[in-house]
Image 1: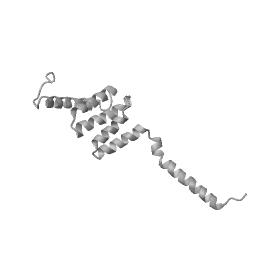
Image 2 (image 1 turned 60 degrees about the vertical axis):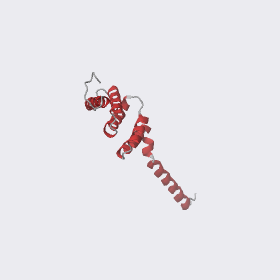
Image 3 (image 1 turned 90 degrees about the horizontal axis):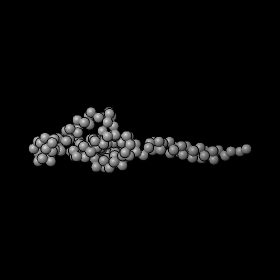
Image 4 (image 1 turned 45 degrees about the horizontal axis):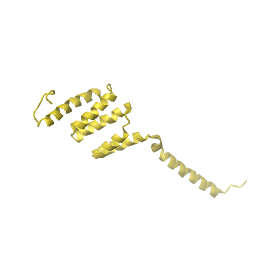
Length: 134
C-alpha cells in the first residue's frame, strides 16, 4: 500500500490546526457562562466602567447561595465607587440573606451601619437624626 507523503503532511497539518483551535478555546468551553460573565464584570470594574460591571454582575445573579458573592461585589461597587448607599444596602442585605455566616458577614454588617447612617443623614438634609427619627 502506497501512502502519499504530501497527503500525510496535509492531514497532519489539518489535525494540528484543529487541535490548536480546540485547545485554544478550551478555556471558554470549560468555564461556565456565569464564571465568564463575572470575569468580564471584574475587568469592567477594574477599567472604571462601573455601570457595565453592574449590568454584568446582575446578569450572573441566579438567586442561589452562589449569588451571595455577586451581591457583595455589587454592594461594594455601589458603596465605594458610585456612592449610592441605598443600592449598596440592598445588595448587602441580599448577601446576608444568602450567606448569613459567610466570609464577609461581619464586614457587611459594619458597612450596613455606615450606609444606614449616611442614608439617614442625606434624607434629613445633612442633619444627624436618630435611627427612630429616620
